[in-house]
Image (cartoon, rainbow, N blue to C red):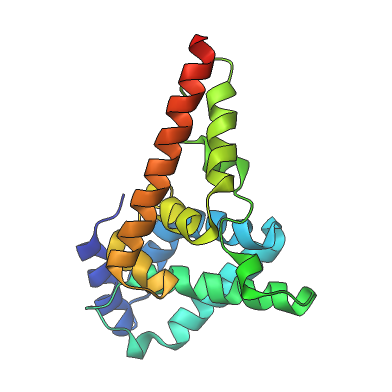
Length: 188
């Protein structure tokens, strides 16, 4: 996982038109951003187009990058906004309907949870995460699956870091309750 100071260095170097830094950023962030975009648009080709637009736009605005603000959060916010625009252009929807984790990808839901050999817990966990309220699910997935910190998530979700913390704590409590209930059922 790339640390915050590396993103700050990339922001500074990209602002100075350093193509190598831009390439390094691209190589480090492309796959996580691709997963994030696919969660919105459900189509890898469309997600790839979105990322191409995001990176091109980032290069266009490089002279305005602020190394004191999270470049990682900026990328996630740009992907989210462009994804929402693509969805809106396809059909009329309410903003509530396009939470990034509305239907999490199988890869995202299962990578971190390989607990039982038959995959039952893995499937249940995926269902429990999917059933979380949209804002809790978004904060939880950005934290646990994408590795963003509370401040970066707050920039992506456009809310206070404390609110992000509350969403994650609530999500963890709900998942813990579900797990305990599931364990109790299996023991009986």
